[in-house]
Image (cartoon, rainbow, N blue to C red; front, side, top):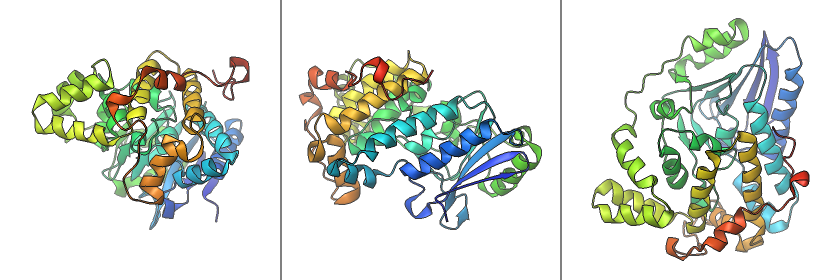
Length: 358
């Protein structure tokens, strides 16, 4: 069976990610199937709304999408496989298509929603409806593998309240449904037991029938008690200042947060902070173009095994020794010229692979 199941029922175009053993990690083929379905249904008068869910190991729902297929990234980077370039160009184009989709786009975000899963979950477009459950686990954990929060992550994290975007981008902290409502990353939540009925109701009765069932209760949100601390530390000028202040604070939370940052790629912490702050003044299209530049540099400024990203994936998912050899090794060793190189586009504007996005 296909890794993406696309079908029309009633007035809805329904897409199901069907790669449960990999937590629905996105392959290039899956990106193309999703894009193809959305383009077909855009002009299909039968389809009044579209919806996306993930299949878990026990059937529909239970897992949404753990992100891009990082094992493929590792293999492709070492082999010089040109499909790696295609993957990111087509993924970001899909993220933009979802954001600007002219029909209601409903994402059922049950289970793991990380990285690329965040990119296909709606981006908060005017016609989106993003539904979490008590099983939802969201994060943008890319700095842990020598990457940055891509798929428009700079854009949607920059629009979180205060300096929550910097905090989430740099630490990769996981959060659930209540925090996702506070952060503006979902539109509401329901009990996971209600999802099958809502999936059917969308096809039969439309988006309003689904929207009426959502709760926006934020009881239990974990970040609320720490919001003032997060804004105070993560609003500082640079990574060194953030970590120095955390380490000097004396509280257990600050010490734990600093320890998390010390484990992340020092280089990509600097790149990520600049990315999120730059994205605050950008459209999604401009942010995606910037992120496409950054992603090219992640694999090409230092190609092959020398890539910070290849090393991060090796340590986490290939050798699984959880001992990445970051270069530079310390936050204090990252110089401005190294970071600046990531923000110089490798393409002239007229040749950029995402130039058509508006």
